[in-house]
Length: 628
Image (tube, rainbow, N blue to C red; front, side, top):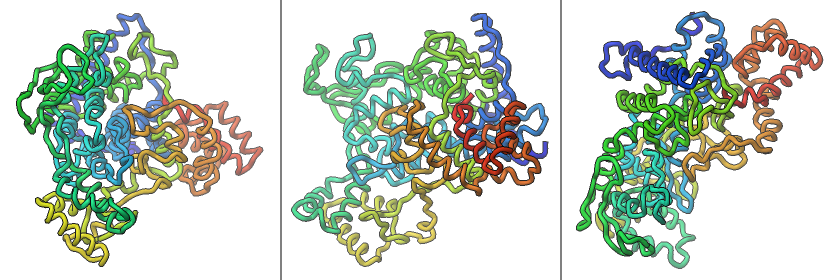
């Protein structure tokens, strides 16, 4: 037991007296049992045989990949496999959910859901502070309802940590209707994108409904950017684009004003010029109104400034159980491999699912856990249902999970990358996290380092109240950059603490530039381009095979004597023990007797090259690339 004790912490053990169910191990255990009882009832109804519980090695590898997005290190794998302890599976779940790898893996999932890329096409503005806000919210386990509410209601300075969630809207600057359609899909499982142009022919929301909803977010703008308009127009005329001052003005125009958000939501909107239905005509002004749930309305007579706050309230607390059910089903899919109902981005009321009682319970559980994603996933990971052996067959029911063992799926790109760097360098979660890079860049180079940050610059600029103040500030900004001087009270020690990684760094995918460039393993294995929701892919292609045969795997693993997986061989005195350790390091299990015979023959025939050949074959095997 001593080996596992070194690894495992029990983050919930100290919370026995807490009133919050999410902190109570007894509540987690009871909730897991309730889910298992629902699933057992399903088996009886469907006359299905109860699956066997999977072995320790499969459970361990599955749990590492599901909970933290990577395979275990050789040391973690041996510590778990080589002990006998009745409660070790639950201890492993506790250890994983309390590790930094949990927030790293969930951040990748959240970035995909929100289509969060580092940069903005056609602008020098970026999503750096918004990305950092999301990453910190995930690491701090911000409840899902608070997380969504802050994004939907956000307003103000894009660089201020308190309002950096405005990036949710500025990411889609100029496309507010698309942003709204994505919000409905992501947070409520309601597909309204087609209603931007026409009524739904299948009794769904109509175009008037969509525009009533869009009125809540209408009137988005930037904070006082008009004060810089005359100066900016002067800069872009003639040869101004070639002047060094233009790049300095662009910092303020794009990365300060362009990343801010004003207008809290007017609450009314004009029907478009091509509106074609009898319930309104082009140019009509209509007031905001919610299409379902507890009704929320705003006046069509005058502009207000709190539409987004009202919409945020509606999303999170006035849509019945739909908000809770949508995220519960998404997280069930994330943990169990298949959603209770599919597709997961189209909400289905519990009564219309294959198992109403289970889905009703999951919705209630999410609300009872106060939208704590970590606690909800802890419940799922603690169920016997999660531990069932792999089922290679397709679901026996249409449109959802049959709860009859985990379906085999290929690892996503981030899981593959994070597992490979684990083999190459050991535990990647020991490396520092990427931090907010709020240095001021002009022409691709940082300026005023240690003297002023983007956070300070943005705060000062957005406080300016006249065109004259903007011109005076800009002139001083230019002079400070040219002289290398400047004020602002920046701390050079803080500037040196900025931690960023380039595309070649062997760190978790959540810390790398995103999305990855086309020559990166992450791209080749289907990482989302972050342009549309859920755009990642696990489909195979020739580039993936070539990458495994000639790329990272060969350079950093097979032919790299300093790779961490080879260090696991230290102290092994026999070929058989070395082979066993390689299997545990790569596949998280010891070899079968037949496999051991094959590998011993390979080592005998190829000597030291035999070990490299074993590594190559195991990493490129389907067992390594798929989750069972």
